Amino acid sequence: MPPASTGASTLAVDASAAPSLLSTTDATARLEPGRPGYRRMSFALFAAGIATFALLYSTQALLPAVSDSFGATAGQASWTVSAATGALALCVLPLSALSERFGRRQMMTASLTVAVLVGLLIPFAPSLGWLIALRAVQGAALAGLPASAMAYLAEEVRPKALVAAIGLFVAGNSIGGMSGRILTGWVAQLWGWRAALFSVGLLAVACAVVFHFMIPKARHFTPGSLNPKALAKTVGGHLADPLLRRLYAIGALFMTVFGAVYTVIGYRLVEAPFSLPQGIVGSIFLVYLVGTVSSAAAGQLVARLGRRGALYLAVSTTAAGLLLSLADQLPAVLLGLVLITAGFFAGHAVASSSVSRTATTGRAQASALYQSAYYLGSSAGGTLGAVAFHAGGWAGTVALGLLAVLGVVSITLYGTRVARAERRALVPATR
Image (cartoon, rainbow, N blue to C red; front, side, top):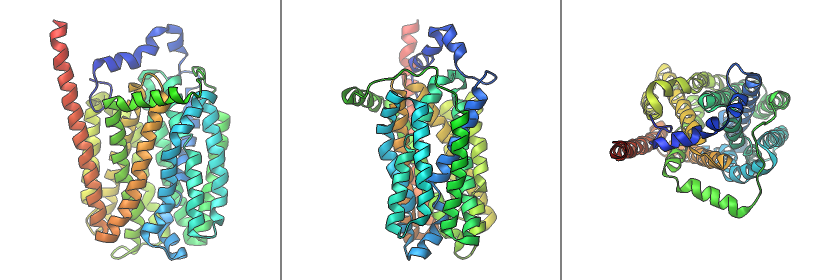
């Protein structure tokens, strides 16, 4: 089975596995379950994942309250989310380049520190414009964390344990997204949306402290230069790789669905026929626990179905959830959100780990490009989802999500055909 979800030759497997074959000492020194440092690394990155998603999407569950406070439309308020994810998408590549020079651990620490400090200022934004601007700065600060974390794992963890390790990091994302939204929902209902944002800032402070004291030192990082030509060559090489391009597109499309659904769902649930209070709307994000399970189990899913099979299952689950959410009964909507969340996090874990395995050089840049596509998808999904909701209600948002799902299916089917053609081409050479 090819190493990546959309079709790759067996040469990609050999390349990604090469570091573990070069030196027995090097291979045994890398982190894996049961070895010293693996648990500390997992816990540290889990905490970082919580802080990242809690901060990045801190205003998402509060959008109806933000709209009321500033007299803004859903589309205008959605920029408090899209500005953060868009800035992250734009800054992730240059900051990942700095991580090549100064180290993954150092970049993750600096990014988390700045983002937390900005998070403590955001509740005092005097206008919607200031709120959006501060959110953009926070998103730019967070840009140094995701790609550096992926590159750190690719360098420090044995290849066979990589999917599971990245799955745990993604699981931290889901816990952060869930806890941040639930916390803001109930705090906002009691004391207002500004107090809710400040509570998320305090949660992120605690996670940053845990990360700082738990993350192991990098043992396999080799500092590189900040040569712009070399960076451009590395990025160009990744963009020229058809497999990586497909993975980047898949990440963007999956996140378009997720960004659209969770940006708009609060507006739908506070309106008739549901008319739920803010605290209950925030609690809806408990369904993120499903994402925690599905992302952490991505490694087992790939082992049973293969990477493309896991992607097909993820995208089918997402589509079923979108269709089910069209019902006007709250239990059906909740089940739809469960399926969307499970499908999204499983697909994201598979695609992101495939990028880390496929790129044998410039892993930070490869992961950065994936993160750029991923968060551009989030920005597009949040803004377009709000526009679609304004134009056609929840059905308009679902239609947008189904179009993105169709894109994932088309790309994965194309990758499957490419993989089969490569296998057929290799048959005569082996006889």
